[in-house]
Amino acid sequence: MIGIDTNVLIRYIVQDEPGQSKIAAEFIENQCTSASPGYISQIVLCEIVWVLKRAYEYDKEIIVNVINQILLTKEFTVENSQNAWLALNEFKTGEADFADYLIGASNHKAGCNYTITFDKTASLSSNFKLLT
Image 1 (spheres, one colour):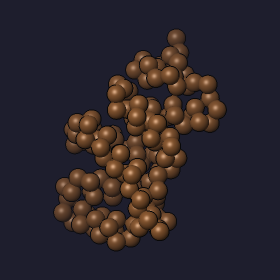
Image 2 (cartoon, helix red, strand yellow; image 1 turned 180 degrees about the horizontal axis):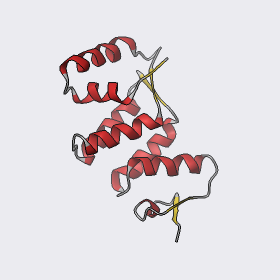
Image 3 (spheres, helix red, strand yellow; image 1 turned 120 degrees about the horizontal axis):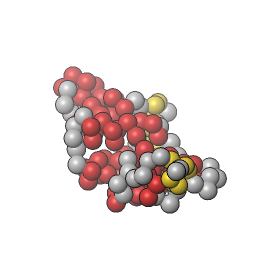
Image 4 (tube, helix red, strand yellow; image 1 turned 45 degrees about the horizontal axis):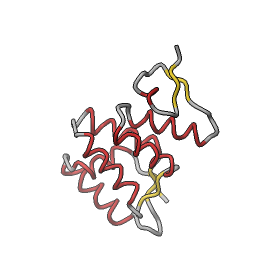
């Protein structure tokens, strides 16, 4: 298994830089298989969401579809995919960032009753409590 960095996945998804996009596509399409999947960490998922939102100004619906497709792709193994699915489901309808929902899901799975935060938007999730 080989880990895949955010910039490789972004080039593959966005196809905005011909040279790197071609190299990324060749790697992912030829080297990542269901028998030997590419590994995507939780940090990379968070970075993908951030880059697509901030740098490329993608709509939330498109970002949700991208993360959904990554999670469904058999040629990828996503770190703690159950937490990523939980975060994605909250992110679809929530106002907080994907990273917040992933933090909440991960902490909950680790046995935390909740996660304290100063982020009022994140605190709307049942996995968070606003620290006042």
